Image 1: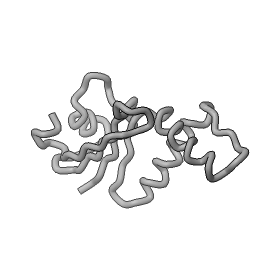
Image 2: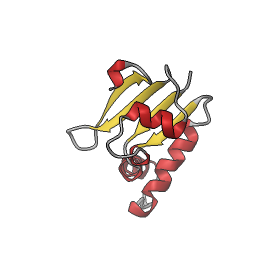
Image 3: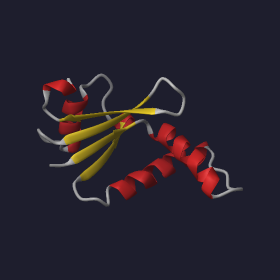
Image 4: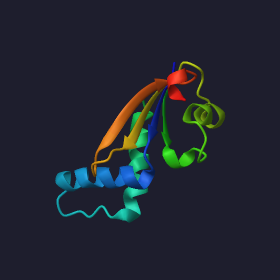
Amino acid sequence: MSIFYLLPPRPYLGERFACYLQGLFPGLQWDSAVWANLADGLAAAATCHPDVYVVYREELPEGDEPGRALADGFGAESGDEVIELRVADRPGELTVRRWRVGASAAA
């Protein structure tokens, strides 16, 4: 079974990571021009693990059911786990929902 991480758009995730990096690298600026690169770097690190895939929300067709979109566009199969992170109501926070492709709870 594979694990798909369905993440918020690259700019949002990159901005969150940039905030973290400012504490590690004082004096360096992590402006919006590098946010997408930061998000892609995180995805590259995560996908070093076997059977792990990272998909950003903006890569899914708008209005499509996420499980179907992951299957059609990214090769997800019935039973694969999806860990979906969404922007929460409070600024800077994320909510997590875990589900399986093909399960009725994903609809």
